[in-house]
Length: 234
Image 1 (cartoon, rainbow, N blue to C red):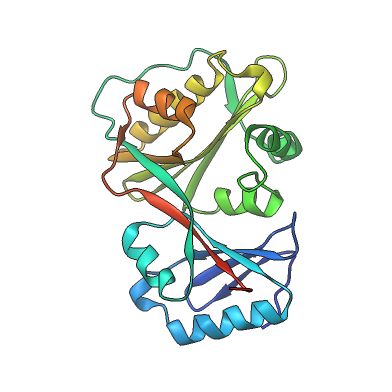
Image 2: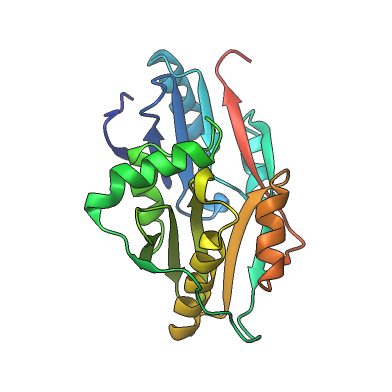
C-alpha cells in the first residue's frame, strides 16, 4: 500500500502519518482498542511500508496493554513517558501572564517555538501539529502573548476526560511564568466543561516539566506510557 505522504491515511483502525521532516519515518496511532486490530493485516502493512522505503515506524504514546499488542509485531520500546493527572478537586491558580486564543496565522510561530523547545524526535512538523489539534473532539489552542508569541498549549477533551496535548515555551521565555499560566488556563478551561481529570504526559528525563505539573496539583499515574518503534532492518 502506497501512502500519500502529504496527508494522514487510515488502515484497519490505525491513523498513519508520514513524517514531513524525514521521508523514511512513519507514525501510527491506534483509533480502536488493540483487541480490534488484526495482526496479519498490520504485518502486511509494515511490509508495504518497507517496500515504500520506510525504515522506521513509531507508535503514539501507548498504555501497557496496548504496548503488548505491538510488541508481538516486533516493536520495541523507544522511550518511556510519565503520565500525570489532575482531578480538578483542589483550588486552581489563575494565569499570571497574558494568553489569547491561538489562530491559524500563528502556526508558523507555534512550530518555531516547538522546534526550539523539543529534541528532533519530539518536535512537531505541521502534520503532527494538526494531528494534536484533531486528536480530541474538542480542542483549545492558547498562546502566551505579552509582546510576541512566547509559548503555546493545546488542550483537548473527550467526554469527561481532558488532555494537555502539548505545552511548549520558547527557551528565551522559560522560567517567566508562561508555562505555568498556560497550564492554569488548561485547568480552568477543563473545569468549566466539567472534566473529571486532565491528563498530561512528559519525558521521564524532563524534570522541569514534571516539577511544574506536580507543583500545580498533578500526580503520577500508576500506569506509565511508552512510544514503541519498529525497524524495517531488524
